Image 1 (cartoon, rainbow, N blue to C red):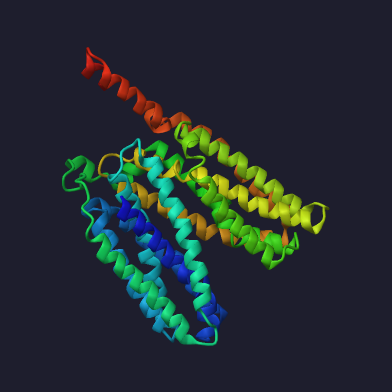
Image 2: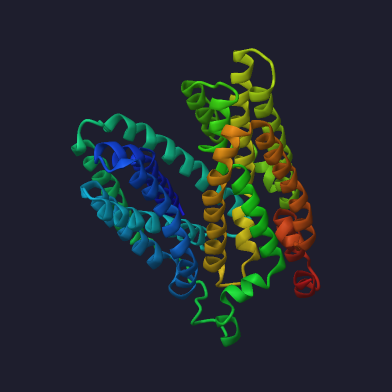
Length: 421
Protein backbone atom coordinates (compact mmCIF):
# COMPACT_ATOMS: atom_id res chain seq x y z
CA UNK A 1 0.00 0.00 0.00
CA UNK A 2 2.87 2.38 0.75
CA UNK A 3 4.31 1.81 -2.72
CA UNK A 4 0.91 2.36 -4.29
CA UNK A 5 0.57 5.68 -2.46
CA UNK A 6 4.05 6.73 -3.59
CA UNK A 7 2.99 5.80 -7.12
CA UNK A 8 -0.10 7.99 -6.79
CA UNK A 9 1.95 10.93 -5.54
CA UNK A 10 4.60 10.62 -8.26
CA UNK A 11 2.07 10.21 -11.07
CA UNK A 12 0.24 13.33 -9.85
CA UNK A 13 3.58 15.13 -9.58
CA UNK A 14 4.30 14.29 -13.22
CA UNK A 15 0.86 15.55 -14.24
CA UNK A 16 1.26 18.84 -12.37
CA UNK A 17 4.81 19.14 -13.68
CA UNK A 18 3.85 19.65 -17.32
CA UNK A 19 0.10 19.92 -18.03
CA UNK A 20 -0.31 23.54 -16.78
CA UNK A 21 2.32 24.63 -19.30
CA UNK A 22 1.12 22.64 -22.32
CA UNK A 23 -0.76 25.52 -23.91
CA UNK A 24 2.19 27.92 -23.66
CA UNK A 25 4.58 25.23 -24.89
CA UNK A 26 2.58 24.33 -28.00
CA UNK A 27 1.22 27.78 -28.92
CA UNK A 28 4.21 29.99 -28.14
CA UNK A 29 7.40 28.01 -27.59
CA UNK A 30 6.86 25.67 -30.54
CA UNK A 31 5.02 28.40 -32.47
CA UNK A 32 2.16 26.11 -33.54
CA UNK A 33 -0.60 28.57 -32.69
CA UNK A 34 -3.58 28.71 -30.37
CA UNK A 35 -5.67 26.34 -32.51
CA UNK A 36 -3.15 23.48 -32.22
CA UNK A 37 -2.69 24.17 -28.51
CA UNK A 38 -6.45 23.92 -27.98
CA UNK A 39 -6.53 20.67 -29.95
CA UNK A 40 -3.77 19.26 -27.74
CA UNK A 41 -5.85 19.91 -24.62
CA UNK A 42 -8.89 18.38 -26.32
CA UNK A 43 -6.86 15.32 -27.33
CA UNK A 44 -6.13 14.64 -23.66
CA UNK A 45 -9.85 14.30 -22.95
CA UNK A 46 -10.64 12.38 -26.15
CA UNK A 47 -7.81 9.88 -25.60
CA UNK A 48 -9.09 9.18 -22.09
CA UNK A 49 -12.64 8.65 -23.32
CA UNK A 50 -11.38 6.17 -25.93
CA UNK A 51 -9.15 4.02 -23.72
CA UNK A 52 -11.10 3.91 -20.44
CA UNK A 53 -13.84 1.49 -21.62
CA UNK A 54 -11.11 -0.99 -22.66
CA UNK A 55 -9.01 -0.35 -19.55
CA UNK A 56 -11.70 -1.73 -17.24
CA UNK A 57 -11.93 -4.98 -19.14
CA UNK A 58 -8.14 -5.31 -19.23
CA UNK A 59 -7.90 -4.77 -15.46
CA UNK A 60 -10.53 -7.44 -14.85
CA UNK A 61 -8.80 -9.94 -17.16
CA UNK A 62 -5.13 -9.26 -16.41
CA UNK A 63 -5.14 -7.49 -13.07
CA UNK A 64 -4.41 -3.83 -12.28
CA UNK A 65 -0.61 -4.10 -12.02
CA UNK A 66 0.17 -5.15 -15.64
CA UNK A 67 -2.29 -2.52 -16.91
CA UNK A 68 -0.63 0.14 -14.74
CA UNK A 69 2.85 -0.77 -16.00
CA UNK A 70 1.67 -0.56 -19.62
CA UNK A 71 0.03 2.82 -18.93
CA UNK A 72 3.22 4.15 -17.32
CA UNK A 73 5.32 3.11 -20.31
CA UNK A 74 2.83 4.72 -22.71
CA UNK A 75 2.79 7.93 -20.67
CA UNK A 76 6.61 8.01 -20.53
CA UNK A 77 6.86 7.63 -24.31
CA UNK A 78 4.21 10.30 -24.80
CA UNK A 79 5.95 12.74 -22.46
CA UNK A 80 9.39 12.22 -24.00
CA UNK A 81 8.14 12.53 -27.58
CA UNK A 82 6.10 15.63 -26.64
CA UNK A 83 9.26 17.33 -25.43
CA UNK A 84 11.00 16.57 -28.73
CA UNK A 85 8.06 17.10 -31.10
CA UNK A 86 8.24 20.10 -33.41
CA UNK A 87 5.26 19.59 -35.73
CA UNK A 88 1.51 19.58 -35.21
CA UNK A 89 1.00 15.89 -36.02
CA UNK A 90 3.74 14.64 -33.70
CA UNK A 91 2.57 16.96 -30.91
CA UNK A 92 -1.01 15.67 -31.18
CA UNK A 93 0.06 12.00 -31.30
CA UNK A 94 2.38 12.50 -28.32
CA UNK A 95 -0.39 14.23 -26.35
CA UNK A 96 -2.74 11.35 -27.15
CA UNK A 97 -0.24 8.81 -25.79
CA UNK A 98 0.40 10.88 -22.65
CA UNK A 99 -3.31 11.49 -22.07
CA UNK A 100 -4.26 7.84 -22.58
CA UNK A 101 -1.52 6.63 -20.25
CA UNK A 102 -2.43 9.05 -17.49
CA UNK A 103 -6.15 8.22 -17.82
CA UNK A 104 -5.56 4.47 -17.40
CA UNK A 105 -3.36 5.02 -14.34
CA UNK A 106 -6.33 6.25 -12.29
CA UNK A 107 -8.57 3.14 -12.33
CA UNK A 108 -5.53 0.83 -12.18
CA UNK A 109 -4.19 2.48 -9.03
CA UNK A 110 -7.69 2.67 -7.53
CA UNK A 111 -8.19 -1.06 -8.11
CA UNK A 112 -4.82 -1.81 -6.51
CA UNK A 113 -5.94 0.14 -3.44
CA UNK A 114 -9.17 -1.88 -3.33
CA UNK A 115 -7.29 -5.18 -3.51
CA UNK A 116 -4.75 -4.16 -0.86
CA UNK A 117 -7.30 -2.86 1.66
CA UNK A 118 -10.19 -4.20 3.69
CA UNK A 119 -13.61 -2.56 3.85
CA UNK A 120 -12.71 -1.09 7.26
CA UNK A 121 -9.51 0.60 6.00
CA UNK A 122 -10.60 1.56 2.48
CA UNK A 123 -11.88 5.05 3.31
CA UNK A 124 -8.59 5.99 4.96
CA UNK A 125 -6.64 4.54 2.03
CA UNK A 126 -8.55 6.62 -0.52
CA UNK A 127 -8.30 9.71 1.67
CA UNK A 128 -4.53 9.26 1.74
CA UNK A 129 -4.52 8.81 -2.03
CA UNK A 130 -6.45 12.06 -2.58
CA UNK A 131 -4.20 13.94 -0.15
CA UNK A 132 -1.04 12.75 -1.90
CA UNK A 133 -2.48 13.45 -5.35
CA UNK A 134 -3.18 17.07 -4.47
CA UNK A 135 0.21 17.40 -2.83
CA UNK A 136 1.88 15.93 -5.92
CA UNK A 137 -0.03 18.22 -8.27
CA UNK A 138 0.80 21.30 -6.22
CA UNK A 139 4.50 20.53 -5.79
CA UNK A 140 4.83 19.46 -9.43
CA UNK A 141 3.25 22.67 -10.70
CA UNK A 142 5.42 24.77 -8.39
CA UNK A 143 8.71 23.14 -9.43
CA UNK A 144 7.75 22.98 -13.10
CA UNK A 145 6.94 26.69 -13.11
CA UNK A 146 10.46 27.50 -11.90
CA UNK A 147 12.13 25.31 -14.54
CA UNK A 148 10.40 26.56 -17.67
CA UNK A 149 11.60 29.49 -19.73
CA UNK A 150 9.43 30.50 -22.69
CA UNK A 151 12.50 31.78 -24.52
CA UNK A 152 14.23 28.37 -24.46
CA UNK A 153 12.76 25.23 -26.01
CA UNK A 154 15.37 23.18 -24.17
CA UNK A 155 13.81 24.07 -20.79
CA UNK A 156 10.53 22.45 -21.87
CA UNK A 157 12.37 19.47 -23.35
CA UNK A 158 14.03 19.02 -19.96
CA UNK A 159 10.64 19.31 -18.26
CA UNK A 160 9.06 16.54 -20.35
CA UNK A 161 12.19 14.38 -20.07
CA UNK A 162 12.01 14.59 -16.27
CA UNK A 163 8.32 13.63 -16.42
CA UNK A 164 9.17 10.61 -18.60
CA UNK A 165 11.92 9.60 -16.18
CA UNK A 166 9.45 9.78 -13.29
CA UNK A 167 7.06 7.42 -15.08
CA UNK A 168 9.88 4.98 -15.88
CA UNK A 169 11.02 5.12 -12.25
CA UNK A 170 7.47 4.19 -11.30
CA UNK A 171 7.62 1.22 -13.68
CA UNK A 172 10.66 -0.10 -11.82
CA UNK A 173 9.18 0.60 -8.39
CA UNK A 174 5.71 -0.79 -9.07
CA UNK A 175 7.21 -3.92 -10.66
CA UNK A 176 8.32 -4.92 -7.18
CA UNK A 177 4.75 -4.82 -5.79
CA UNK A 178 3.27 -8.24 -5.01
CA UNK A 179 -0.47 -7.97 -5.22
CA UNK A 180 -2.72 -10.28 -3.16
CA UNK A 181 -4.61 -12.81 -5.27
CA UNK A 182 -8.01 -11.61 -6.39
CA UNK A 183 -10.41 -13.25 -8.85
CA UNK A 184 -9.78 -12.57 -12.53
CA UNK A 185 -12.30 -13.01 -15.30
CA UNK A 186 -10.75 -16.38 -16.16
CA UNK A 187 -11.29 -17.54 -12.58
CA UNK A 188 -14.92 -16.46 -12.52
CA UNK A 189 -17.89 -18.61 -13.57
CA UNK A 190 -18.99 -18.41 -17.17
CA UNK A 191 -22.06 -16.35 -16.32
CA UNK A 192 -20.06 -13.62 -14.66
CA UNK A 193 -17.51 -13.57 -17.47
CA UNK A 194 -20.21 -12.24 -19.78
CA UNK A 195 -21.22 -9.56 -17.30
CA UNK A 196 -19.03 -6.62 -18.29
CA UNK A 197 -20.89 -3.45 -19.07
CA UNK A 198 -24.29 -5.18 -19.12
CA UNK A 199 -23.81 -6.32 -15.54
CA UNK A 200 -22.71 -2.84 -14.50
CA UNK A 201 -25.67 -1.16 -16.18
CA UNK A 202 -27.98 -3.65 -14.47
CA UNK A 203 -26.70 -2.49 -11.07
CA UNK A 204 -29.21 0.22 -10.18
CA UNK A 205 -27.14 1.66 -7.35
CA UNK A 206 -24.04 1.92 -9.56
CA UNK A 207 -25.99 3.65 -12.32
CA UNK A 208 -27.34 6.13 -9.76
CA UNK A 209 -23.83 6.69 -8.43
CA UNK A 210 -22.53 7.34 -11.96
CA UNK A 211 -25.27 9.93 -12.55
CA UNK A 212 -24.43 11.51 -9.20
CA UNK A 213 -20.72 11.39 -10.03
CA UNK A 214 -21.28 13.18 -13.33
CA UNK A 215 -23.13 16.00 -11.55
CA UNK A 216 -20.41 16.18 -8.86
CA UNK A 217 -17.57 16.55 -11.34
CA UNK A 218 -19.55 18.76 -13.72
CA UNK A 219 -20.64 21.19 -11.01
CA UNK A 220 -17.32 21.45 -9.17
CA UNK A 221 -14.16 20.14 -10.79
CA UNK A 222 -15.34 21.05 -14.28
CA UNK A 223 -15.70 24.71 -13.22
CA UNK A 224 -12.46 25.37 -11.37
CA UNK A 225 -10.29 26.55 -14.25
CA UNK A 226 -13.03 27.54 -16.69
CA UNK A 227 -16.47 28.82 -15.67
CA UNK A 228 -15.69 29.87 -12.11
CA UNK A 229 -12.43 31.58 -13.00
CA UNK A 230 -14.11 33.33 -15.97
CA UNK A 231 -16.93 34.45 -13.67
CA UNK A 232 -14.43 35.73 -11.12
CA UNK A 233 -12.44 37.74 -13.63
CA UNK A 234 -15.33 39.09 -15.73
CA UNK A 235 -18.18 39.55 -13.19
CA UNK A 236 -16.36 39.93 -9.88
CA UNK A 237 -13.31 41.78 -11.19
CA UNK A 238 -10.97 39.38 -9.42
CA UNK A 239 -7.29 39.88 -10.23
CA UNK A 240 -5.14 37.02 -11.47
CA UNK A 241 -3.19 37.09 -8.21
CA UNK A 242 -6.44 36.73 -6.24
CA UNK A 243 -7.42 33.85 -8.51
CA UNK A 244 -4.11 32.17 -7.68
CA UNK A 245 -4.82 32.76 -3.99
CA UNK A 246 -8.23 31.11 -4.37
CA UNK A 247 -6.69 28.03 -6.01
CA UNK A 248 -4.11 27.90 -3.23
CA UNK A 249 -6.91 28.15 -0.63
CA UNK A 250 -8.59 25.14 -2.24
CA UNK A 251 -5.43 23.03 -2.00
CA UNK A 252 -4.69 24.25 1.53
CA UNK A 253 -8.20 23.36 2.69
CA UNK A 254 -7.81 19.83 1.31
CA UNK A 255 -4.43 19.37 2.99
CA UNK A 256 -5.67 20.70 6.34
CA UNK A 257 -9.15 19.17 6.38
CA UNK A 258 -8.56 15.77 4.75
CA UNK A 259 -7.73 13.79 7.86
CA UNK A 260 -9.62 16.11 10.20
CA UNK A 261 -12.95 15.15 8.60
CA UNK A 262 -12.00 11.50 8.06
CA UNK A 263 -13.27 10.16 11.37
CA UNK A 264 -16.59 11.98 10.95
CA UNK A 265 -16.95 10.66 7.41
CA UNK A 266 -16.07 7.10 8.41
CA UNK A 267 -18.79 7.09 11.10
CA UNK A 268 -21.53 8.59 8.91
CA UNK A 269 -23.80 7.28 6.19
CA UNK A 270 -22.05 7.73 2.88
CA UNK A 271 -25.21 8.99 1.19
CA UNK A 272 -25.66 11.66 3.88
CA UNK A 273 -22.02 12.75 3.58
CA UNK A 274 -22.49 13.28 -0.17
CA UNK A 275 -25.77 15.11 0.47
CA UNK A 276 -23.92 17.34 2.96
CA UNK A 277 -21.29 18.12 0.32
CA UNK A 278 -24.08 19.30 -1.99
CA UNK A 279 -25.26 21.74 0.67
CA UNK A 280 -21.70 22.97 1.34
CA UNK A 281 -21.18 23.59 -2.36
CA UNK A 282 -24.51 25.42 -2.55
CA UNK A 283 -23.16 27.82 0.09
CA UNK A 284 -19.97 28.10 -1.97
CA UNK A 285 -21.96 29.17 -5.03
CA UNK A 286 -23.85 31.71 -2.93
CA UNK A 287 -20.51 33.15 -1.83
CA UNK A 288 -19.38 33.30 -5.46
CA UNK A 289 -22.65 35.04 -6.34
CA UNK A 290 -22.02 37.65 -3.67
CA UNK A 291 -18.49 38.19 -5.00
CA UNK A 292 -19.68 38.87 -8.54
CA UNK A 293 -23.23 40.14 -8.16
CA UNK A 294 -23.17 41.82 -4.75
CA UNK A 295 -22.32 45.44 -4.13
CA UNK A 296 -19.63 45.04 -1.51
CA UNK A 297 -16.09 46.34 -1.59
CA UNK A 298 -13.33 44.82 -3.71
CA UNK A 299 -11.84 43.29 -0.55
CA UNK A 300 -15.15 41.66 0.43
CA UNK A 301 -15.63 40.32 -3.10
CA UNK A 302 -12.14 38.83 -3.09
CA UNK A 303 -12.67 37.25 0.34
CA UNK A 304 -15.98 35.75 -0.79
CA UNK A 305 -14.39 34.38 -3.96
CA UNK A 306 -11.49 32.81 -2.06
CA UNK A 307 -13.94 31.27 0.42
CA UNK A 308 -15.79 29.70 -2.53
CA UNK A 309 -12.70 27.71 -3.48
CA UNK A 310 -12.03 26.85 0.17
CA UNK A 311 -15.56 25.49 0.60
CA UNK A 312 -15.14 23.42 -2.55
CA UNK A 313 -11.96 22.01 -1.01
CA UNK A 314 -13.84 21.04 2.16
CA UNK A 315 -16.39 19.17 0.05
CA UNK A 316 -13.63 17.42 -1.89
CA UNK A 317 -12.01 16.28 1.36
CA UNK A 318 -15.33 14.74 2.42
CA UNK A 319 -15.88 13.03 -0.94
CA UNK A 320 -12.48 11.37 -1.33
CA UNK A 321 -12.98 8.78 1.45
CA UNK A 322 -16.63 8.31 0.46
CA UNK A 323 -17.22 7.97 -3.28
CA UNK A 324 -14.25 5.81 -4.37
CA UNK A 325 -14.75 3.20 -1.59
CA UNK A 326 -18.46 3.13 -2.46
CA UNK A 327 -17.63 2.29 -6.09
CA UNK A 328 -15.47 -0.57 -4.81
CA UNK A 329 -18.19 -1.86 -2.47
CA UNK A 330 -20.77 -1.83 -5.27
CA UNK A 331 -18.54 -3.93 -7.54
CA UNK A 332 -19.04 -7.72 -7.54
CA UNK A 333 -15.96 -9.75 -6.64
CA UNK A 334 -13.32 -9.50 -9.33
CA UNK A 335 -15.06 -6.60 -11.12
CA UNK A 336 -13.55 -3.64 -9.25
CA UNK A 337 -11.43 -2.69 -12.28
CA UNK A 338 -14.50 -2.52 -14.53
CA UNK A 339 -16.40 -0.36 -12.04
CA UNK A 340 -13.43 1.94 -11.36
CA UNK A 341 -12.90 2.45 -15.10
CA UNK A 342 -16.60 3.16 -15.65
CA UNK A 343 -16.60 5.78 -12.92
CA UNK A 344 -13.37 7.29 -14.30
CA UNK A 345 -15.09 7.48 -17.71
CA UNK A 346 -18.02 9.35 -16.15
CA UNK A 347 -15.57 11.72 -14.47
CA UNK A 348 -13.76 12.34 -17.75
CA UNK A 349 -17.04 13.08 -19.55
CA UNK A 350 -18.01 15.59 -16.87
CA UNK A 351 -14.59 17.25 -17.03
CA UNK A 352 -14.91 17.54 -20.80
CA UNK A 353 -18.46 18.95 -20.78
CA UNK A 354 -18.09 21.15 -17.67
CA UNK A 355 -15.59 23.71 -19.05
CA UNK A 356 -17.35 23.82 -22.44
CA UNK A 357 -20.62 24.81 -20.74
CA UNK A 358 -19.35 26.78 -17.78
CA UNK A 359 -16.68 28.90 -19.48
CA UNK A 360 -18.93 30.87 -21.87
CA UNK A 361 -21.80 30.96 -19.37
CA UNK A 362 -19.66 32.27 -16.50
CA UNK A 363 -18.10 34.98 -18.66
CA UNK A 364 -21.21 36.28 -20.46
CA UNK A 365 -24.21 35.40 -18.23
CA UNK A 366 -23.00 35.63 -14.62
CA UNK A 367 -26.39 35.57 -12.85
CA UNK A 368 -27.78 32.53 -14.75
CA UNK A 369 -24.40 30.84 -14.25
CA UNK A 370 -24.59 31.11 -10.44
CA UNK A 371 -28.26 30.05 -10.34
CA UNK A 372 -27.61 27.07 -12.61
CA UNK A 373 -24.78 25.65 -10.53
CA UNK A 374 -26.49 26.47 -7.26
CA UNK A 375 -29.35 24.25 -8.46
CA UNK A 376 -26.86 21.58 -9.54
CA UNK A 377 -25.37 21.57 -6.02
CA UNK A 378 -28.80 21.18 -4.43
CA UNK A 379 -29.44 18.44 -6.97
CA UNK A 380 -26.39 16.60 -5.60
CA UNK A 381 -28.09 16.42 -2.20
CA UNK A 382 -31.32 15.13 -3.73
CA UNK A 383 -29.52 12.48 -5.80
CA UNK A 384 -27.47 11.40 -2.78
CA UNK A 385 -30.58 10.85 -0.66
CA UNK A 386 -32.15 8.81 -3.46
CA UNK A 387 -28.94 6.78 -3.82
CA UNK A 388 -29.03 5.97 -0.10
CA UNK A 389 -32.33 4.16 -0.59
CA UNK A 390 -30.68 1.78 -3.08
CA UNK A 391 -27.68 0.94 -0.89
CA UNK A 392 -27.42 -1.91 1.56
CA UNK A 393 -26.47 -1.20 5.16
CA UNK A 394 -22.93 -2.47 4.50
CA UNK A 395 -22.54 -0.16 1.50
CA UNK A 396 -23.99 2.95 3.12
CA UNK A 397 -22.70 2.36 6.66
CA UNK A 398 -19.57 0.16 6.39
CA UNK A 399 -18.38 1.15 9.86
CA UNK A 400 -21.60 0.01 11.53
CA UNK A 401 -21.63 -3.18 9.45
CA UNK A 402 -18.03 -3.95 10.43
CA UNK A 403 -18.86 -3.41 14.10
CA UNK A 404 -21.82 -5.79 13.77
CA UNK A 405 -19.55 -8.44 12.27
CA UNK A 406 -17.07 -8.05 15.12
CA UNK A 407 -19.87 -8.46 17.68
CA UNK A 408 -21.18 -11.47 15.80
CA UNK A 409 -17.78 -13.14 15.75
CA UNK A 410 -17.48 -12.61 19.48
CA UNK A 411 -20.66 -14.57 20.21
CA UNK A 412 -20.14 -17.84 22.02
CA UNK A 413 -23.09 -19.66 20.51
CA UNK A 414 -24.64 -19.96 17.07
CA UNK A 415 -21.81 -17.90 15.62
CA UNK A 416 -22.14 -19.06 11.98
CA UNK A 417 -25.86 -18.26 11.92
CA UNK A 418 -25.38 -14.77 13.38
CA UNK A 419 -22.40 -13.98 11.19
CA UNK A 420 -24.27 -15.07 8.06
CA UNK A 421 -27.20 -12.87 8.98
